Length: 379
Image 1 (cartoon, rainbow, N blue to C red):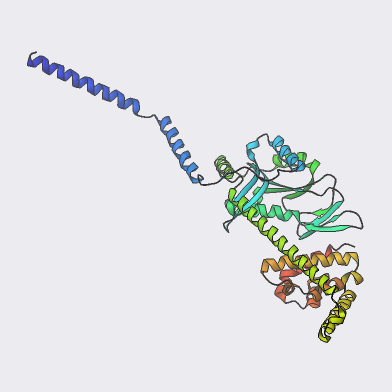
Image 2 (image 1 turned 180 degrees about the vertical axis):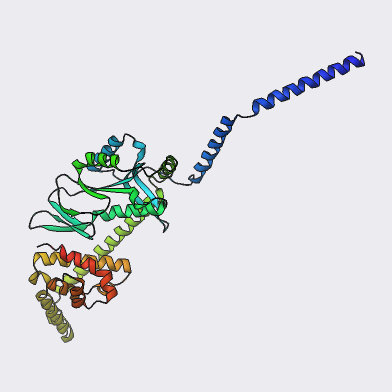
């Protein structure tokens, strides 16, 4: 082969190689659409990484009641989108724990939170500002129970702390009462309704139509992804199991102490008086005298049934307040002060302050709770 021909072959080979490289580089270069898809996919992967440490498990409880299932099915049928309905959502709290919201609907016009009140008969009376409501089983038999609106308020406050860009107007609550229980004189002044189970479908439809949208498309998608990571958090389940074990152990200790006390009483009763010393006789006599005095001072002997109900409410409130403030119960409200409240039944903060000798700070701190219990005392 002559040198000229060799040079021509080499030149042709170089040209062919350059053409091949050019074609390959053009094929690998992504279009603008492809670049956008790749960016979205990369961003999606990064977003997923934010929640990769969230532990998810199936519910371990006995499941919802038939009424709660009905509420969930009703809400699902009205909205037509099961993905927007959240059951047992565990929302992180500022103190490092979690707060469970049993049933919640996410719509573009806000969050809708539901609580079922299981009272199968009678009627209820209450105000949103009251700490306790009254359940009348009959005109003669009445019970106090915790204000159910408080539970929804706690749900809303937790959501507001976790989603600070939202506001209270974005949240709507429903306390759903069994149809067999009548709702009487229930007053609310917020976006929380107290309704019968059978009224839920049409009232929820009306609210969904009337309420204006508050979430944009992007915020709605963001909340969907975040809320999906909050279902059935295993950490809370472990804490609840631990708490249950602690309570069972406490009950065992209480039963043990009670059995020991009863045994001690039995041992005292079977002792032979002829073998006791003078000091033992004096001790037994003093115990008997105190027992007789206690029987004379029993509330059951000089309080009416309504006043006894108020007394039980005051004692329960005292214990709950003492637990909150980590004090002795009698440091909050003594037995003598409870008797004064039951006897006088003050109707104003000034009257309450006079009979208890409270400071201005104590009156502002406890006064409204005490007056609410007196106001709702059975008649």
